[in-house]
Amino acid sequence: MSQSGKDSALPKSGIIAVIGSGTMGAGIAQVAAVAGHTVKLFDNRPATVDKAIADIRAMLDKLAGKGRMTAEEASAAGKRLQAATKLEELADASLVVEAIVENLDAKRQLFSSLETIVSDACILASNTSSISITSIGAALRVPQRLVGMHFFNPVPLMALVEIISGLASDAQVAQQVYDTALGWGKIPVHTKSTPGFIVNRVARPYYAEGLRILNEQAAQPSTIDAVLRESGGFKMGPFELMDLIGHDVNFAVTQSVFQAYFTDPRFTPSLIQQELVNAGFLGRKSGRGFYRYDGSQPIPDP
Ligand code: NAI
Image 1 (cartoon, rainbow, N blue to C red):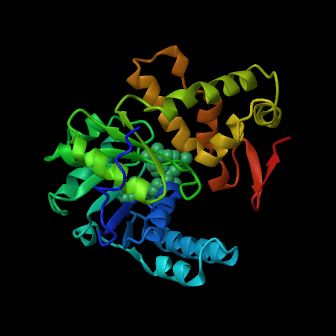
Image 2: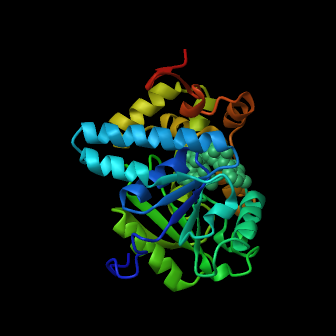
């Protein structure tokens, strides 16, 4: 891990654009706004941007209520959040963090459009969980300015950020994004663009073995989760964690890693999870996954 300090971090005056205002984009926007940046949030479903901004402001008020920040700080951070209704409104961004659907073509298309809008000095970053930064960059006119900036869920609470360099990424750009993440109170690590990077590579067997145990009807998700939490020392068991991540996202990541490793059977996607996606049982965000959700309390499926 580099210990370069915050030398090359983007100044607070730098505008951050976040594209995709779902689970991850909203969290990234919150962290960047609290760190002092003006944040422009864009989504191809504009209503989700308004909801994300309202939710973040409510969250900031809650944090102020708990004494984690002052009411003035919460209000100022909330005011730094802006809804963008067109990509063109992101023209003055210093850093764009993309957090849209986990799909190579969608990401390539978005970054290609962005390159016609932002300045050449603007840094482009993808929050992808597993897709090759090298492959996304291959669609760009200036691939040197693209890196992965992979946050973890929930973004305001999780310190780790993987800074991912593709074959064409400029080392100075990676360092600037690293230093920026450090300045936002995160713990960044540099890594290269391999399938799943570090965390999603190591985590695949955690989900896969849990799903195999379930497939063999050896135990229910709640039992497996409890064992991993209480005896294994993990913060969350594999099923509650997949429910938190979202099955659409988690399944797409497994498929991406499986394909990228030439269909290595270790990474074979689960039919159980595919059915959850088919049903729209995406986890917490849809109200049902392996568990049902009533408010914030998971209720194990019978
Ligand atoms: P999400 O489904 O909650 O949000 C994605 C948002 O992107 C949606 O609001 C959707 O309307 C928008 N969107 C889709 N295509 C778009 C486009 N072409 N232009 C503009 N907006 C578009 O997904 P989530 O969970 O926030 O994931 C986003 C990215 O972050 C994915 O690449 C995922 O792999 C990655 N990620 C997800 C984590 C998780 O735990 N959910 C953890 C770390 C990374």
